[in-house]
Amino acid sequence: MNAFGQSVSLEDLLSGQPIDQHPFELLSGLCEGAIAVDANCRIIWISPQYRELINIPKDQDLIGTPIDKVLPTTQIPRVVKSGKPTFVDLMQIHGRWCVVTRMPLKDPNGKVIGAIGFIFYTDLESLGPLFDKFARLKRQLEQQKLIRPSRYGLDDIVGQSDIIQQLKRQARRAAQLDTTVLLLGETGTGKELLAQGIHQASPRSGGPFVGINMAALPESLVEAELFGAAPGAYTGLDKCGRKGKVQLASGGTLFLDEIAEMPLSMQAKLLRVLQEREVEALGSNRLEQVDVRVIAATSQDLKTLVDDGKFRADLYYRLNVLPIKLAPLRERNEDIPLLCSHILNIIQQQAQIPAPELSETASNWLINYPWPGNVRELHNRLERACVMAEGSAIEPGDLGAYDDLPSIIPLPNAPTELINARRDADRHSIAMALEKTGGNKSKAAKLLGISRATLYERLKKCQEIISADNNHTKMY
Image 1: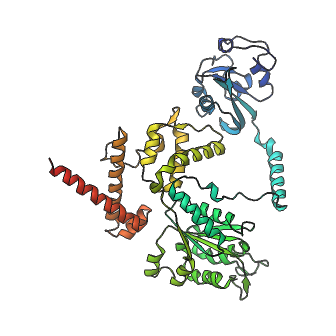
Image 2: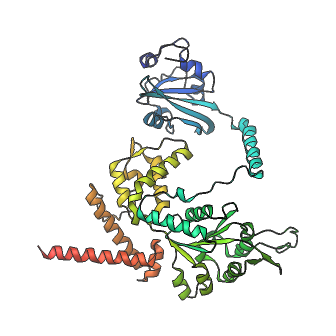
């Protein structure tokens, strides 16, 4: 039944015969091209404008042709499988960017019987005034402080495990104490997310949150970026100077990620900020008072760096007032199903594509995988899977489950073999890291992206497994 009360069946559409004023013809007049498919993603109708856009001759019959044969990159099959529309997406057709919308077709009972895609704009330059207007309105709202840049709260930390609940309790207590916090955890465990959550739960939530990654900052720029530069500090031509991240964060929170990468020469200046609440800009001889709370984070063992003379002991003890440790994902794998659901929803919203479900085999693999890259790696693998999945569900292969396994390890065919393969891969990775570093455990741990304590734990488990295997062999 169309919008005019006319009944149009799929059989009528699949017949390819002209239908007076059927809904597709009426809707195509409102856009620059449209195409419709049935539940099997076979083309049931295409407008003349769409034919012209994809260079299909008028006399070529496309009815019944799978749409991916004509448009290999189309997302319409995902709309059919999910039953969810994708609004205002960008699609490139023969090197030309188009604004498209895709909608499922459903029968009176709500069953998906196909989908239709519309091209609304083929000239993106015509949308320039709209984009400019949106940008102006956003800047105006920000200036009037009617909206704020997006911030994460502690409730945005996903997980129901005891470890996560304890982490949130610690963070809430730390938020109420206006003192320095040190976040400890492997790469990808969500240290910045926790830092923003602490800021949002603190009395400083109305102030700015300014974050900087010390590992991504060239040493020559550290001083100016952190502490600012006086007028003319560089060339003598800059009459205004510039504020550093410390000054910009005044009244709020300064987040220093990968603090272990801060040059020794700058650590003394940071110590002054923490102890005296004052900062001296590059090229200036004047001290400026600042009111800032510092949250630092590192994936390295700061105490070891202090012992090695690579980090100031006085700064370490000044930072280590309220240490909070974030557990790696492998220690809270009961949170993985909830994290997967959350991340897939984010990917769907950002990419405007229906995210496929996880198969049972894929879910089992995700739960048993050791996750050296933690939540960041989980997000990356799920994002990859949403692109690579060709079936109705994500399978282990779509997640790259077999990419990292050494060639000497057979591919697993069952969950129990998957666990054994993971164990063997872990042992192989540790052995390779120790070989490359000449047996230096600290360097091996850094190469693997884990802490030295975690490496010792894994070595102990490997030794226990070897001993168990040897005892098992002796029985026979």
